Length: 414
Ligand code: ATP
View 1 (cartoon, rainbow, N blue to C red):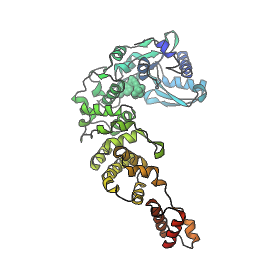
View 2 (cartoon, rainbow, N blue to C red):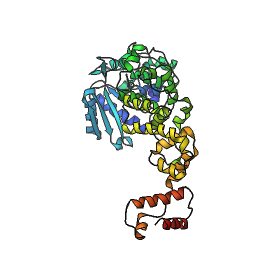
View 3 (cartoon, helix red, strand yellow):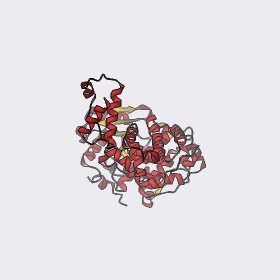
View 4 (tube, rainbow, N blue to C red):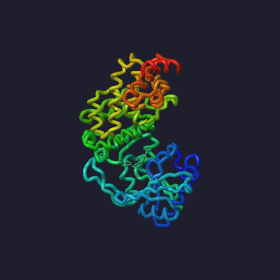
């Protein structure tokens, strides 16, 4: 594995020139304030793995908020400081970066956990301390950004060695207990890179995990469902007993749906794909409504996600009877359901009527309008909807096939 980070960081295939120049401006600014600066975590890991780097987390030994204020003064943009965490988000002006974007500026810090599973207390510290608060050795490396040491690797915990041995290793035995979200993170990295978790998770960590807030757990599942290998991540979590650590246990993911997690809706379906929502629906569609209602409560689903998860199950249960319904009945029913639900049910069932609804039936409309009915001398009333719906149903069911048919049917209804 090449450790010549200087060369990698100057390679435009790894870091585009405009990003390189931005980083060097930031490093110069930090240095002028007497703050050594580093890129850390996922950036270093992915750079060493020669994978595309997305996350540019900048850590300074000093005060990230002060650095952010100086950057805004010199280059513009906007700063969102988080005083409690000693961090800031710099919303970079487009001129510096060719695009609107944001960068996380972080003060090197230690974290102390007053109680397992709680959020930590933070105090400014050295980069070495900062690396020691992290989750895994492969995420606990930094690369120096400023001055003559540009490109120097800081690896006090053997991250590089574990990276070459393809190992996910926590930094201390209580790490999973201290923060059980690391269990999800370890599985995410293991399955993403084809590595192996070396550290024991243990019963105490599982116990603490079951007491985490719904938001924190759901966030971890959201991150997993965004990943290309999400199916193998869910399967691995299940095998590790993570789903069983909850009360009631979380339903397992149906392996038959694994490939569907990466499906992209065909353009003709006119459905806006959403990986995370599709993932939850595929995960839950075979469950019982009561089980999903309790899961939605435990993971604090938004009311929208809760509702569409439940309607997916109900629609799947109704499908055998719906298949034989007329196109009009089916269309009127499916129109009340979010398109993503119909799409996911089509994914799992490949039922032709669902595809017909998505690509054709939902666009079928009668020609007659309310104004036409007024022109016939009718006074607006609920009867309008009845007539127009009847005409649309006739088109959908092939009872009428041209404008003349529609006029004839309309006149018979007046
Ligand atoms: P990914 O590619 O999954 O985004 P990342 O390393 O950029 O990976 P982030 O979630 O952005 O992941 O976190 C940035 C860094 O912060 C990690 O590399 C790790 O060093 C540290 N970190 C994040 N979450 C934790 C945690 N729960 N406990 C300890 N350190 C963490």
